[in-house]
Structures are given as C-alpha cells and as structure tokens.
Length: 370
Image (tube, rainbow, N blue to C red; front, side, top):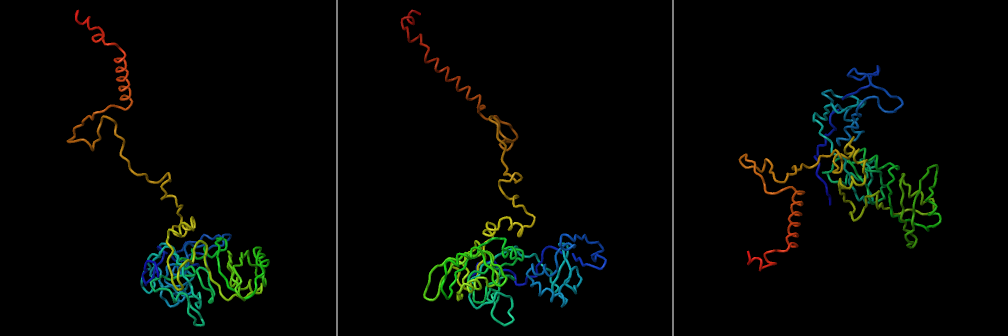
C-alpha cells in the first residue's frame, strides 16, 4: 500500500532560474565578468551549480545521464544549446530539455521501502538482475537510495528525491543508529562480541563501535541483534565471519528514528513532512527552506504578527461603531474606582443610620406633645 501524492510523469523541473558561467582561459565567464576566485576555499569560483546537478535535482535524470543529454544536444540554457556539461547555472536562467521548460522541483521528500531479498540497490545492473527501483510504483518521482543493502539483505531502505538529504542521512557524523537482526551459522562467543564495542580493524579497514547482543542459539544457528552507526560495505558479514560465524540472513530493522514496523515486504510509504521536521530540526530548515531561521512563524517570536484587538472602551462612552446616526450617547455607568468609593459611602451612611436612634420611635410621648 502506497501513501503519497502522485507526481507528474514528466519531471522536467529545475530550481528557479539558472546563468551560464563558463570558465575561459582568461579566467572570465562568457558574460565577460571576471570570476572571484578563492583558492583557499576549495569551492568553485563561479556562482550557481553545474547543469548536471540541476537536472538531477529537478528529477529529470541522473547526473551521469545528464552528460548524455547534453552530448545529444537535448539541453538548452537561455536558448543556447549546450555541448559540454562544464557549465554553472544560477537562478536567473531559462533551462529546457527537449524544448520543454523545467518547472520547480519538489521539496525534499523521504520514503521507506521494505526491501525483499533478490533486489539490487541500483538504478541499473550490468548483470541484468532486478533492481529496487524497478519494483517501485510508476507514480513516484526519480529517487535515490540512502545507502545500500546487499542483494541478500532485506528490511528498511530509505529513498529520497533530494541529493542534499541523501548525503546528510548517509554521513556517519549524523550519528543515527542502524539496527539489524542477524541469523548466522556458528557459535557465538559472548566475550568476543562484547569486545566489538571498542571497534575492530580487519584487512586495513577500521570499523567503529558495534553493539552486538546475543538473542538465542537455535541449533547450529545463532540469532543476534546488531547496532552500529557507520555501516560500511558488508561490515556485519565481514566482522562476524572474522569471529567464526557466517551470516545467512540479515534484516535491517531501523535507520535512526525510522522503523520498519509492520510494513510488508515490497511496499513503500512516504514519511510525513511533520516527522521529518521533528527529527531533522535545523537541518530540515536548511534543506527545505535555505536561509530560514525557523523563527518567523513561531507564535512566541517578538517580531511575529500579533492578532488584532479592539481598543478597550472607556466606561460611560461608546465607540464610533456603536454610534447610531452619528449621535454620541452616554452609557449609564461610572468609573470603577469612583463606583467603589460611592458604594463605600452608601454603606457608611447605612451603618450610621442604623446606629443613630430614631427620636420619633424612641419617645412617643414627646411626639404627642408636639
């Protein structure tokens, strides 16, 4: 079951506008303006992004295919047909592919896919084996996998339409834990498994801390729960083989906060943007809304727009909206402080009247004499 918004089949999309900035022998762009080089920064001295990156981000094709598109003369920038991918484009350009203008790219999105065994995590396989992307619904945009799973590995595989989000999730510095359930042939040594928390080096490759918990021994096989944060190529299989166990089943249960749960094999579902905002925090703002601080929409921000409130009416007066035919009327009532003083005066008078004897009732004979 797939839960997602259908995207157009024609994904000729690109970020807003893009300028050609071709490097020449004189160190100037084609527009004649000299580039501001900064050798120490290690970045391109020209503004914008390479045209292949823009096409890939738009979902039109991969970066490798973009080079073929350009070689075939299918890509134009500002009416000029490109013959080399060595071009930078910025937000002011008009890009077309097959004479069709590029629309705005989709915002970063993330899907979780329950990969079954027998699928290769690749767009194309030289050996002709079935791939993950061939099993995805046709309504999905062009996606990239976050990391890879071997052909015999099953479980959670994250897919995204955004290269920046893909790179961020793959970085070991992100620190997200990846959990696996492993079945291996052999006997487990608890002491050697516990030592993997300090890391291990095999054939010149250093693997960081690996947390392995023995679940149970089932005949000649053992079930293990493995957690790691790096995930190098075939890391679990190589480490356990070094300990005398051969992995015969490997299931990824989670990737950071995203869980496989009850998702059936071969099914894909999109992760809500609300969850992405909660889990990625500031990084999500940089990916989805570059340059945003994330404070302008908060209700507690000092610069936020406060709801309009009507001015407080003074007692005894009516506002212009309450006037009828332009006549100003005085409402009955007095100010709060004056009202309290008046009530106090009335109470004092009532108290004195009760305390003062009534001459007319106290001496009836005097009344008769009068």
